[in-house]
Image 1 (cartoon, rainbow, N blue to C red):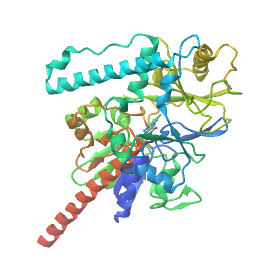
Image 2: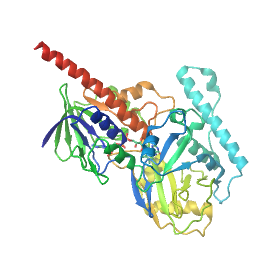
Image 3: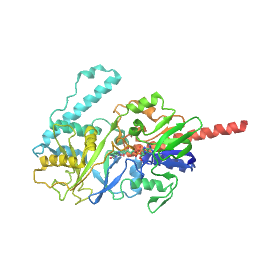
Image 4: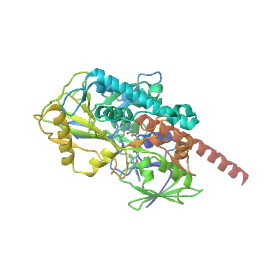
Length: 450
Ligand code: FAD
């Protein structure tokens, strides 16, 4: 079957839906949204686990309490989303060694200070490589070696760069972070947004403009339009396409372009790093970890960097849920994705027994998200260097004829975040609306000329 429409939006995550909403609000009614999965939300996704609702993807609303208001925080307020303030900064005082001892706070604070200074030196070095200021090159940043140094290095680089370098999210929107702990899930913000422009009933989207289970496989584009082909053989003829798939999907061969993407585009896409970030959830018959205000996050220091390092208990979020979350990234994420969940549970239990002793009970359930192996994601989020190379991101987001690129990875200031995705959708649709206006004007002139 062939369907005609003015714009096809590929992907119904935060960016795709915010893009479609802006188009609808500006009178572009015949938008078709094609989503590969059987649900909306993309990397915002909840699942029932151990009797509560846990977030497999985005968990926090980052950037709250500053001068400007974070638009995702606004959406959360409109939906009465239940959230819980998170303070990671205490994690450094709950660092366990292999024998279950907590490092004295002075040692932890000193190691932390040293790591921050070293990270700053490293950044300055990168900066000076850019600016050819050779005087800083002589100061070599120290390489983390001991378990505590490795643990802090991991926390600093995978979670807290804010303490080293200003991050736009914190500068613009504030430094507070809130964990979403709502049975409806983070994704209820998307349903709230969809309500404004799609037909919904009893919390379900029933609008025929949203099509689920539609895996886009080919974009055939020319000066006149784009023909979108899905895996089930349907064809959508559109004047324009907004492509909101992740940078990981763009790097994969899921979608082919005809004619192929030019070299500047494929090179930019290939040069963007992807972070894999995995939250492993473990359910226990009872609690055996310390609770209380400054105990939410704790760290395991091991000679292997990133090996079950960063832990969180869910008692603040859901008291009595007896759930722990351990975060793995990149190589460790890929490793656990490839092995059985039973093996991952065994490894996690070995680590927990080192921290809390041999008598703790075994976990009774485990949940391991697989963002890397999901062919509609291929990773968790884009990871640009702090000294962002502007042409790289400009090339990633630059439209190609009638194909517009959106998504968290196209947002210069807030890439990697939910609000980055949300704002990118708006930015892309604004640019497209302007292009449509110019095209209309041009056609009008041609009409008048004829
Ligand atoms: P997506 O949500 O990926 O949307 C793209 C959509 O396209 C998906 O629904 C996908 O199924 C669909 N798609 C893919 N291929 C095709 C195809 N061929 N045809 C049709 N559809 C297709 N951000 C925060 O702000 N705070 C956090 O705490 C946070 N933590 C995170 C933790 C994890 C584990 C992950 C994975 C992400 C986290 N993020 C966090 C990042 C945040 O989730 C993303 O930045 C944001 O959700 C991305 O939205 P998007 O619209 O750009 O992409």
